[in-house]
Amino acid sequence: MADKIGFVGVGRMGANMARRLKDCGWPIAAVYDINAAAAQALAQELGCVAADHLKVVTALSDVIFTVVSDDRAMKRIYNGGLLSRARGKLFINCATVSPAIHVWVEKKCEARGAQSLEACMASSIPQARNGTLYLMCGGRPEVFERAKAILARLSSEGQTMRYIGPAGKAAEVKALVNMVMNINTAALAEGLGLGAALGLDLTMLREVFSQTGAASRVLQTDGEDMQNREHTCFFSAAHAAKDSGIALKLAKAQGLNLPLAAATKKQYDRLVKDGFGELDKSAIAELTFKGRGKVA
Image (cartoon, rainbow, N blue to C red; front, side, top):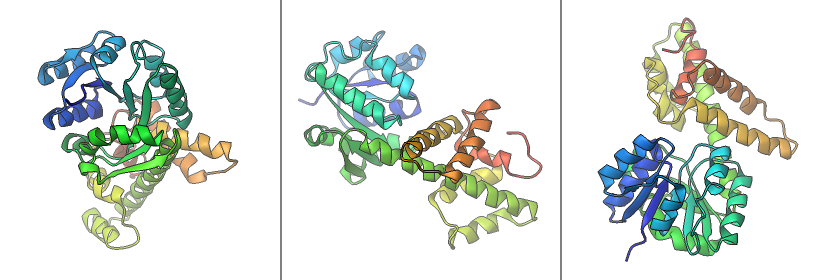
């Protein structure tokens, strides 16, 4: 019999992961979110319980996915009843949080007779829905083996899933992935912004970029959106700021100065401060294109 699955955090990513697993035949037992209306709507769609307390999710589920926003949210759920009746359960944590939080969660789970695994995601909403997430996993090897069958359904049948090492190590890799992605996004915005100021055709410029050393994955995902001022959220500016901050803290602990990452974080912090944190990270272009000066 397939493990019963629970989800804590059913925003854009968590909800689509739950839908994907349901489509693949895994029974979704319960969902929980601080946005109760979102949890209730998804529960009705999937035919499961909209839990009114974290402990209900654990009680009804064998495997619990957590897809929450940040370090504070992770501490809140694990100190707030999620580990009630946790013995024998598996907790799979997918949020981008500080590596130390994953180590802390593993210790908390093991003290309750449970297991935990970090499954950091380097993809977005469409990949969550169609099961092609890129997953970086960290934790005990035997826990990774336990989780592989479920995670394979989220990661191209396991082709885009990688075991990194002990707890916290996958989160370190994820922090670096997002740091470099954010820097690339800021650089692309500056290149297109300067091109626009010079009167160049931006469609032509993007094509040239794609065929030269300026090519990048960000060019594929964000270039046209920057040109057209289309910033529907797939990865928010607020998350970009948070994740750059995680990487900078890791660098500080190692005595490293990362000026590009620091400058990029300041740009995303500015978007958040101005009230545009929930726009896509592509909105950083609004800070660089001449004559815009204000997010559309």
